[in-house]
Amino acid sequence: MLEKGFSCGNVDNTLFSKHKCKYILLVKVYVDDIIFSSTNDTMCQEFSKLMHGEFDMSLMGELTFFLGLQIKQTRDGIFLSQTKYARELLKKFDMQDCKLISTPMTSTISIDKDKSGIEVDGKRYRGMIGSLLYLTASRPDIMFNVCMCARYQAFPKESHLKIVKRIFRYISGTTNFGLWYPKGSPCDLVGFSDSDFAGCKSDRKSTSGTCHLFGNFLISWHSKKQHSVALSTAEVEYVAAGSCCSQVLWIKQLLDYDLKLRCVPIKCDNTSAINLTKKPSLTFKD
Image (tube, rainbow, N blue to C red):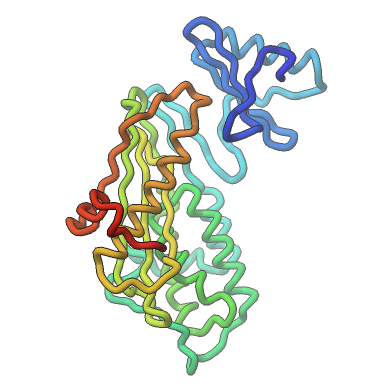
């Protein structure tokens, strides 16, 4: 690829790009699969001929399915989903005929180790959690709930399995959910951070949640328990904002797409945490 005039990605070494006038060709290599796209059809055709001249390869056409992700391209944008995977998941764990529910978890539920609870099949429980974690690649709406249940994989109890099954009941009615990336979105990056306070009953630690939007595109999201026990809501919100900032700094390195991101706002709903960012000498350590 380098011999043919491509540039290797600074962050992702399997990403290659090539510029021609105002057009750009992007090539992503994954094991023995290659995905490529360009702002100019001629560059795509030239790359296809190049690959056929060097290797014995098959051109599969427009991308519609990759690593469990279904891709639907239209004139208005691109829709990513895991509908097929979600249905296979429900069938695998005998939940395809379950009663539907509108939310993955109630807002009042509080999970703990439940030491006196009835033990369940740990292998099956871990299989359910692992499968759900892969589904979060296109379903940020279940990220928090799945990550919370994943904390009890070592010794799962009946109460934990009941909550996991509720997530499956929610998925059963929302298999067509996914991510919509509309065409013509502005190239502005914005980060959002939030946190609960002492949400874990076992160790009283809080959970950070962040997401990042590039224009109208949701490109990054995560939910993670904080490392230390916080003493105030200001502290947990500040730690969450710091995690959001770290992700922003990583995204800013994605200059392979000729992005010039300078001022990136981070949205936080806690006034005290915002004021702490203005006085570095008073900050906390995670």
